[in-house]
Length: 316
Image (tube, rainbow, N blue to C red):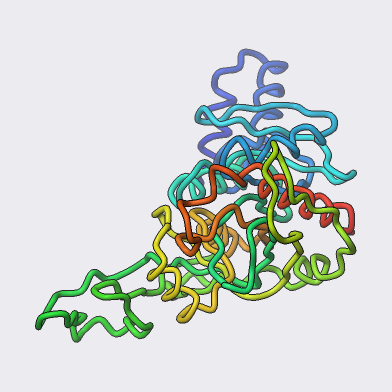
């Protein structure tokens, strides 16, 4: 007996009489393929942000909001720019992003995924406030911590054949193992590509009025939208100049964060198209003073949300 059938039988068993049985079966009919009960059957775009400051503008624009709670996390349905969406926080970190994105896919009928939020700038040609839309995302802190075989020399085990990318000291990046509905055998991937149709719409977005001042603080350059390049994500807050330079040189990354590549991996495994908008709140250790996130987080969060809303307005 399949998991789905077992759950339907269990739901039906609690009902009494023919009317109760019909009610129970109707309640179980909305289950996802994982066996989780669907909370909503409308096809929706999952709109994700990592933490509260990033969701403020989007929540203000959401029409017809209806809130659900799963595992203590709120998922709010409604419309943004006329498009049916489910809006929620991934939570900070790769693990939270993975877990809550999968919950959304299990409990709602998600057709596409978009992520909006702040990030650290890696490409020295970009500036705080700029909004980036990378073409692919990698998990750059999925690493081997290599053995020191001589002073200052770190060597991977000879049998570890997937350690091919340039190292930073003892840290050797590796691809992750992943399965998908389309490819049930294990594959090793570093880059999780965004959806080309969604990327094309992002490239078509016209002028979006991006802010360069907030709460009395202003940027020295006018923010702009940059579509293309790479993004990387990892489970550490990164604020180190040397590592920033390494990431730019070896991954050609425009930006780095703590969630997007995890969402990309979940999207890949489930066969759901995704795209991410990230605005630079800081320079990930590249600035001349202390980390800038606390000062420019609000500007960056709203700039990312504005571009993502423009994308939704353009999406057909």
